[in-house]
Length: 207
Image (cartoon, helix red, strand yellow):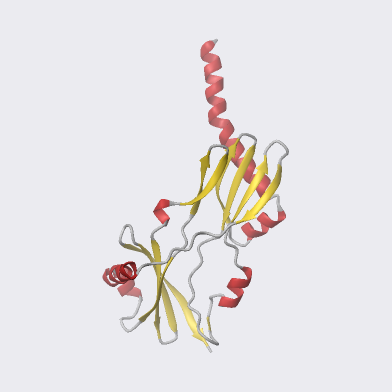
């Protein structure tokens, strides 16, 4: 009898949290604003449950960087004015699990990290040595900008509340923009691991 009770308790503890997380996401997606963000590419990044309340973190996908050029836009890349007007940086939704409804949605702004000159120089060095960069970007291309990338976020339980914190593995990352003629490329650098994550062609500048 004791063994049966223990099995039931263990099964409940293992299954119920997963069900609750899925239910919290389901309730969150019923909200028109959250549904719209997700349809535009945002993702439910993290969920934490404290008693009968769930906290749902919504974060936009990482955007490709674009360097503003007066009177010009890159083909295939949103203009800076449009990005600023429509930009969604993230939100935290509070869900009442008992009543199955959203009680609060707060927009959030990820921390902005400024790279030091030493870090920028490190980005240059990592990019110069990488075969992906030399294989895709022409030698004559010039560096236009080096800047930090916003970190991915996660929820951390603190007593009866949650804190939004940067994921440690995504904190120390940078973007490097190259240009040759009318063409632009972006490299994404992991400074902690001293490696290039990816290199992308951004497009051509259109008059």
